[in-house]
Structure formats: structure tokens, C-alpha cells
Length: 71
Image 1 (cartoon, rainbow, N blue to C red):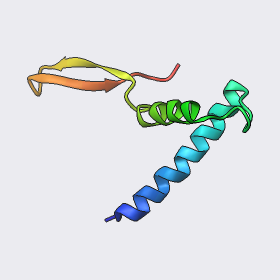
Image 2 (cartoon, helix red, strand yellow):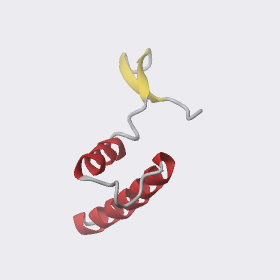
Image 3 (tube, rainbow, N blue to C red):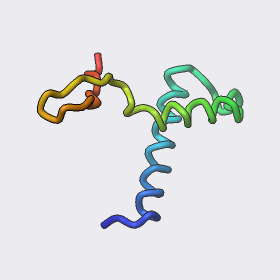
């Protein structure tokens, strides 16, 4: 079982990669990076796996979450 410390370390590592990639996509330099931009990227990072929709499942008799395929 992973400890909180190990999970936290991986999240920090992935967050850094994500912010770096987004900076390249948006053509943002380190000088342009301010608190609001970092917070915006952080919120996007936290919700990146939430793309999808709900569908009714006859098997489970309830709505289930289905991830949308990346285009």
C-alpha cells in the first residue's frame, strides 16, 4: 500500500510536468508566470480526468460515469 508521502510526491512530480507542458502550449515564460496562472493550471490539473458524461446502466440500474475519448 502506498503511503501518503509517496502519493504526494508523485502528484507534485506530475503537477510540475503538467505546468511545464501548459507553459509551452500557452507560450508563457517564467517571468509571465504569476499566482493566478499557477492557480488556473492547478485547477485544470486536478480536474483533467473528469472529462466524460453519465449514462444509464441497465445492469446496475443507476447512472454511471463514462470517460470521453481524447480526440
